[in-house]
Image (tube, rainbow, N blue to C red; front, side, top):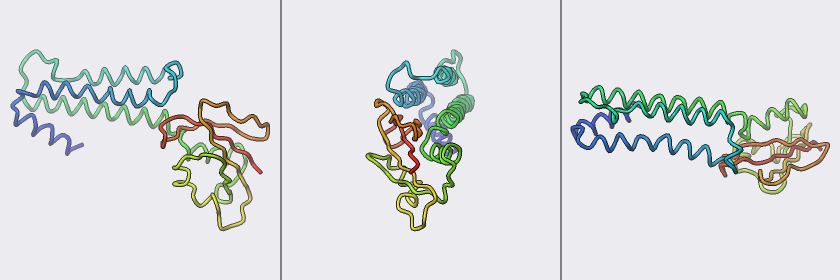
Length: 194
């Protein structure tokens, strides 16, 4: 953040606020990019939770703290402080939102929770048998579980399918929904204890 603050300060200092209005207007693109990224995770607009709309409104309101709306002439320092404050708030609220909204839906926490709570397996003594297409981040976090060099107490068959398709209907298996970060979309995961 300090490097960005220095950059903004130096940029505004050299242009003497002559072209700064154009730069300040481009700061509105940051919330637009964040909202686009979040809405692109969902197939339909009706699937977006209402809490997301509250977040969208919040970052738009925070981005309105912008010197471009100032009627009177401001000093460079005041402009710099206002821009920094607005950017810090946008980054802060975005970080909190994405962490609280999507942390429990990523692959790693879903697998850990399902193994521990639903299948009563120890992650250290489990083996994964992969079926069909699987996310690349599975191998990043659990490559030692795919073909382990130890005798496993739990063998879990994992099947991944698109969120569009119906989850696998098997009374002995467990279906969960994850946020696949490689494709930036939701996917179904089926756990079947062998």
